[in-house]
Figure (cartoon, rainbow, N blue to C red):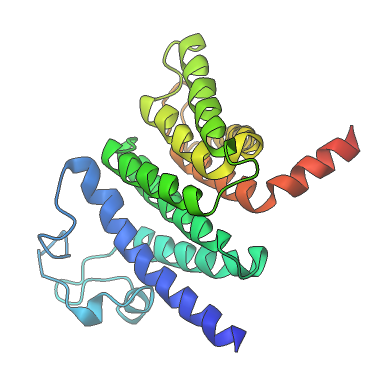
Length: 250
């Protein structure tokens, strides 16, 4: 019985991933997420249901517009697949508990941040405000222990990034600072600190690899949001294990 449920969650995640693509691409430009309907950026052909099946449409159409045959970015199905897999993994890792609501909400936020920051190096305030309200409500009914850990996590996340931005004279963007306040609501103090450590680690590793292969130029700004997303998801699911390993190691 569990496998059909997981497959349903995978499909739901794929569909939501398609929607989060729209949110991440349109909200930073102050565009409606409802109108106009999704269309080909090359010929403006309005996409029909057969064009919008997550991942499968991209494969069936061989990555091209059905009308003008212009190539479609693989970024879209990658985000859809990533969201679907993360949604499905959440109950496998956490078990069937109310905490899944937090997990799916956090994944949703991180996917939108990933999309918007990669495309525009911007994390929209509108998105952060909506998710702040959602996490406040969710943590009221699904609290951390102790209950104030959420509020303390938000304060620590915001203050830490603000201090780094001040010391580095703008090395951290305002969107990243506000994002970590929202992340702190979901994770609490310990995990928000682990999240930042992992985000910094991933950013350094991938930045170095990018410079080695010539994809990243030294001194050129790069979006930190994707690494925050990666670090936060890792910290949420495995932060306690990482902390236990670190304590044993030292």
